[in-house]
Each structure stands twice: as structure tokens, then as C-alpha cells.
Amino acid sequence: MSHGIKILEPSFDDTKASRACKVIRSSINTNKLNFTITTAKMRRSTGPVGCILLVIAHPDDEAMFFSPLLMSKENIHVLCMSTGNDQGLGRERCDELRASCFSYGISADKVTIVDDPLLQDGMEIDWPEPAIAVHVYNKVCSMQSAGQPPQSLVTFDEIGCSGHPNHIATFRGVCVALPQLIQIAPALTAFKLNSTNIVRKYSGVFDIMVSCLLAPDDYMDISLNVSQVYNAMTLHKTQFVWYRRIFVLISRFSYVNTYTELPRYVSPAIDDSLRPVSLQL
Ligand SMILES: [Zn+2]
Image: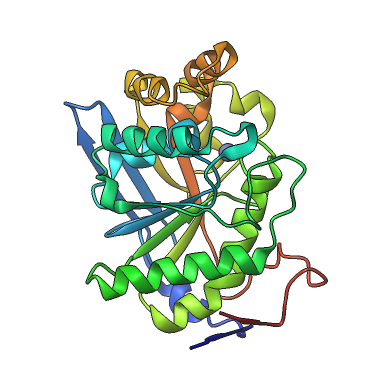
């Protein structure tokens, strides 16, 4: 059976949104030194909530970039678009991803790892967006069938935190899938993890304050428990080389995640010349 993905017109209701009040919600978990601060102004949702589907490109992305999210939220499923087989270590890296996710309280049955010939790990390999969209669509369908429909989807943005082409392709693939996902899961809201300039990227914990000052309306998860990030990365034995140990300590992504909600139609960030008008699933 096939399903068609079609490009939809924008459905965002600015009139309703403009009437919405500013909502500030904060929660503090002192045991884990986690803080969740959600500022929603003229928004219809309050950041990633409920059952969350995190879409990443490689094993270790979850710890290197999304740790504040994983530390702050409860019910998270992970969809990894590759096995990370760039150096022939795909099998080991799959095990490492499951172990890392488990350290965040995410059981192995909530971790899905794609091994698609079109989506092999590599800086030089272009990932076709329709292939990514199919896997995201199928994952949402399977979660719905299992009685766990995702309420929020989180992935990279158009810069992909590090500029890695596979990260950027993952964002673009999610954007391609989003119109069809909204049709089958109307309550689903998608978010992209905001990238920053290189100075802020390596400002570590200090970027919490900078994020609050420069983008007060962004949704935000904060975690001061950097030891959890470090421990999770030690489980990625094949990847935890010396410069990644430093990265974990000085990267903003170990302390703060800020998100922007994706529009409920194909993102303008997607180049029309690269975007299929329709896609057979
Ligand atoms: Zn990656």
C-alpha cells in the first residue's frame, strides 16, 4: 500500500495566535539539576511535550546535542537515520546508542535505528530527503499502531548544530514528511534544535544566560548535569576521542537546548528545486 505526501498550504491561524497570552512555565528538578523553562508567546504549544519522537542522524547525536532534552523530558522515542557505519563500526555503534539511551532512561524498545543503503553515514554522502521522510512517516505510524502516538517531534535545524550534511538532510527530510504527518497525526507539533554561531556554541554553561537574553521566546531545556552527558558519551566507546571529551565540557548543547516550532507546512528553508512535490511512501 502506498501513501502520497502532498505539499499543503499554510494553516497557521495568526489571528488566534495573536490573541494568545504569554505563558511561562518552569519546573525544577533539583535531584538531577535539571531546569525546564518554557516561554510561549503567541504560540499554540509549550515546546516539546508528551510522547516525544527525537529524530537524529547518527549514534551519539543524542548525547552530543540533545542531552538537555533527554534529561528534562520523560517519554522519548529515538529514531536514528543511520547506523554510523562510516568506519565499518555500524554494529558497535548501534549497541552504543542503545546503551547511551538507556543511561537517559530510554529503553531499547524505544530506539529505532535505520540501516538504509541510501542513508549511510558520511560527510560526502548526500541523503535523499524522500528516503528520510519515509522512515519518519513509518515510525510515526508504528508508534500510533502501538498506542503511543507522538505529540512532539524534535530534530536538527537547517544548520544541524555542526554543519554535518547528514544532520541537515535529516532536518530537510522531516520537513518533507511533516505535511503528511500532520494529516495522520493532527496533534503532532515539530521542533528544530536551534544552532548558534561558533562563539556561543563553545560557551558551554554561559550560553544559558545568553540564550535567555537573546532569544527569550525560544522554548528551552536546561541541564547542569554535564556528568550525565560525559557518562553517556563514554558509552560511545568508538567515538569518545579526546576532542569529543573537550566538546562535551564546553559545548552549549551539553547544558541548554533551545527550539523553534516548525510551521505546519513545508518549511521555507527547503529549496523548492530539491523538494519533491509529491512522494510515494
Ligand atoms: Zn551526527
